[in-house]
Length: 490
Image (cartoon, rainbow, N blue to C red; front, side, top):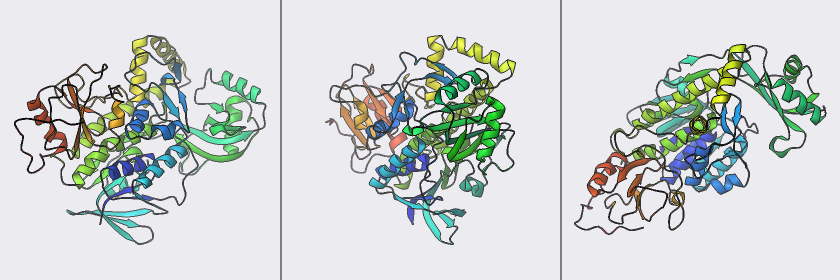
């Protein structure tokens, strides 16, 4: 029996596999596809996901294969300059094709010892008090202590669990694909500019992934397909391009073609016993704002350390359930945001008037900062109860006297950043690092960070600290009773 089976080898599943391996958990990833997909529906990382990669020492890998972008708002087709004073040391996103994100995360997970099996389709799932049995299409059975379904919007795991997936079905559909075009690039650009004055679900972006002459084409479909799992044809693209733009631009030689709708649904529960859901298996929504991939990666970032603690038998009561308690509201907020964004993308007079109003509102710095913080998730705060204003927030990468904060979070452990030098994590040193250092950017004596970088406590009282450590990191290690004096270490 292995510790955890992750079903699905997309960004969410691969991120989770890496997080679990950092904590020494045995992980097997089962991916239905025999080969990595070349499709890149997800096109980048928002600021919070950039922070996540930095916290795990992966950012340099992404920077080497990505371009930075700064688009404030990114809401309902409304583009504004990046707002000032956004609460992050990484005020940018990364234009990273999903295929690249998956390749980098898979390499990281493998380096850490995760086992990734391709061509493995899950068809059955049963659980008991001791573990979960996963049945594969080839007739084999695998056994694990826990299973996490990261297998997309049509999740087999969710279906086998019988978890409700309420929401709204697709009412509109959009065609998306990469292909070449014979029309002159200047003509294409001029037509796109004109059409997008009234139809924002349209575009031909040139030189996709640096490939000269290759266009990312997006165009409204003619209704909603009965079988949305079937990809569209090139002829469908040509017909819709002519209907919307008056020309098909001579598109040809498609690399891949797909469709997406505006269906918006969320799993009623993210956990059923020893089986959990993350990423698109837990929530689907239109890609407005580019939040889907980021939401899934951040699900994994929240779940990984909690599930690892459960596997190792040191999780305090309720820790694993806090995954649903914290991430379900986040998913619900993203669904609400994308519903609003899709309304703004409409072509009727009401939607046009509303978009014009929002555009004027976002010229106000406070509004722009609020929208950008919401889309990029840097404003996220988990409800951890009453306390310091930092409680529940993720801490940005502050500069210390010796290095940066995120350099100390690479191993997915808790961290006490102690500017007083008087505190101690004795009894939890196997789970929590103690860093004695100071930062001109941090106006609080000390902060206790969870492995995901969110603030679990802030203050200067050793007694208060001792009350919060067990809530997130379990009981004190045996034989480490509190001593009269502490000798904090870095």
